Every structure is written in structure tokens, then in C-alpha cells.
Length: 251
Image (cartoon, rainbow, N blue to C red; front, side, top):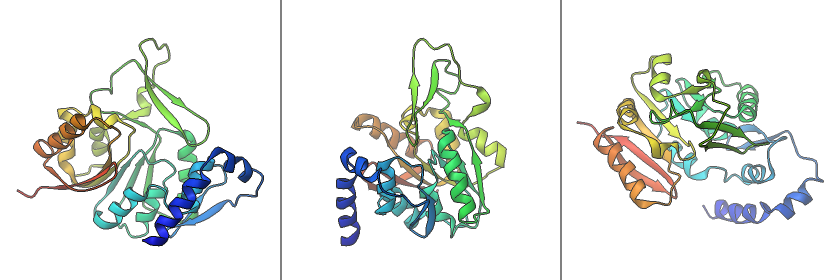
């Protein structure tokens, strides 16, 4: 525990742009051993490279996944990024892991990581995840930045529409893989705040939910927690920073 905190403190210092500039002159390895998996870091931005190098990348999510996820349940990973988080669980998982990621860059890195670690249970969907509220919203665009950062924007005037074949919802994923019970890791950059009743009903198939809530608005957070309990039958059990773990309420 103490070593982890020291690593994080040192790593946060090294995340700066100035240190990144210095690191740019050093030879970076192709892969780094991250919590039991080999993760491809050659093309990563400096900040996330440091977080993986010092083993505190997505630390809250990984701790909750390790503590609560069931190796005998299929897993849906919404907003997978490069897959480093789910790779820490994949060594033990005995069921399918469905990774949903919109960024082409991240999907390329994810595929490299899956192949390098010889995982056979991954299925990767290069799609933009939407709540039912926004799935038919014509004003959404997907603006992918260089390297690891990508942003989903809502604009009033947008001529370039998102290809419907490149979008998905929980309902679509359940139908595609015929899932009856699942567990979900969710990091969708604020789209969780747009969940409506249909999304909460879809989540009734979820046994374990680990979700990062991207908001500082406590009333919105409380409303989301309330709906997860009232409609989805998911009870909040633990919180680490902005990451929440919900477990199905047995009736």
C-alpha cells in the first residue's frame, strides 16, 4: 500500500509536460509489465505511459474489479481504452469479455495487448456507446484526437453525422451476444448521466456494475444512484474517488 502511494506521488510529478519533453529523448520500450499483463506503450501519450509504468493507471477501477468481479460471468467493458484495465482481469476470467471502444487508435492498441498476452476470450467492438437518450441524436459528432485522448461532442450545427453502424447501446450488445446475466465496467465520459428508463431496465441484467461517474454535480450523481437502485435493482456497495461499485439486490 505504501509503495503504491509512493509510486503514484512520483508518477504524478513525472506526468508534467516538462518531464515529458525530457522523456521524449529516451528510448521507450514497446511493452511494460502492468499488473501481470504486457501492455503496449510505444505509442502512448506521456501521461498514460507514466501511469502504466508506475502501476497506478485506473487504480480505483482495477481494485474494485479485482475485489468484486465474478470470473464465471461474461463481462462488458464500456469505454475500454487500450484495454489495460480489463487485461488485469482477463487472466482469471472464464467467460467472454466484450470491449466497446470508439477510438480507432485505442482499438489498435487493445488488439496488440490481447494478442501479446494470448487472450482468447476477448471480443472487440469498435463502436461509440450511447444511452437510449442520445442514440438517435443527429447533433453528436465523434472527434478523435491524436494518441489516447478522444472527445464526444454535442454541437448544434453539424453536417457530418455519425454512421449508425458505428454506434451501440446495452440493448444491442445483449441482443448480439444473447446475454442473460453480465457484469459491466463502465467509463463512458459522462454519457452515463444521460441514461433514461430504457437504459436502467437494460441494466437489470447486470450483476456487478463498476462505473466511473463523470460529474461534480452531487444532485445528478444522487439521481443516477437512485435510479440504479429503484429501476435496475443495483445497490451501491463501495466508492473509490469517482468510481462506484453496485451489486444486484437479491429479491
